[in-house]
Figure 1 (cartoon, one colour):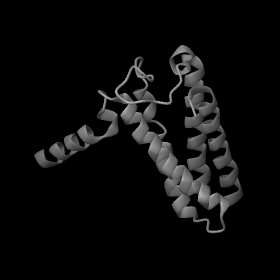
Figure 2 (figure 1 turned 30 degrees about the horizontal axis):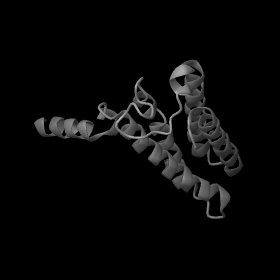
Figure 3 (figure 1 turned 90 degrees about the vertical axis):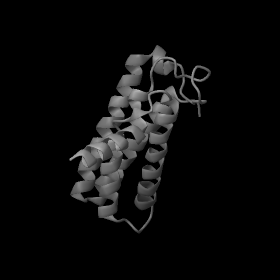
Figure 4 (figure 1 turned 135 degrees about the vertical axis):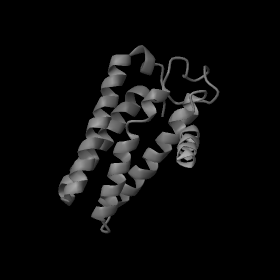
Length: 146
């Protein structure tokens, strides 16, 4: 029992969510995973080699990590205020209600993608993947220096 507890504690300490002392690095790590998952899904929806099971696994993972980076945007973590450079615009903090709405839209669309992917209808999956991408673009347009 002690070993399981210690291993669980080590896993928690090593996770990006625990990196409270460097929120920029923590959120960037999570966003890199977003990009990796989205790129793999994008290749599948654009190509002929669509694998429903693999897409469903990626959609489930994306939905899980879609809940994570937002806690790593505390006040004082904009460019020039944090250890690492960030592309986060000051509007994240000055227009917090708009930011929250954009985040909530993204979470909702990734949740729908997970559900649609589990059903396996390729046309529906492609449409929902496009909806997720639209939320990404919307957030980048308003809250990220690209």
